[in-house]
Image (tube, rainbow, N blue to C red; front, side):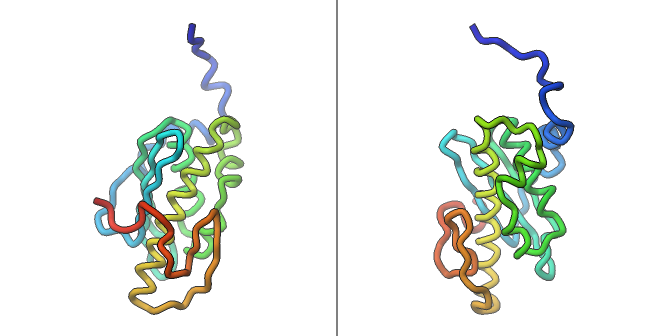
Length: 162
């Protein structure tokens, strides 16, 4: 028999609940400056869309097909990244997402990793597009298995959304 915990609202922080139920950042941006899509082993899929002005993330959004924990993590990435420079955004880690949410269950840690990974793909896409415009002015840096500032393809899910 499946047991439902009726104390859900009291088991989670206010930050977790706000991020889990926030819908204002779920949007598909046509022709974003950066786009990244990633599917986790759990089957959840996230797609991030970023707009950058003078090196600063000015508009971020996402689409998600997944659980409430993944939605909370995606919203947290948007919250942490907005207003940061692209270089500063690379410093956002799954640990930061979990710390902000306070009550992300250990068995949903992969949701933070998936969300940050999808966001990194959008950053990589942005940098790849900038190289085409400006030439290679960025050094190589590897974060979570992705090179940013390199000419290598960081993986599936980078480029313009279909």
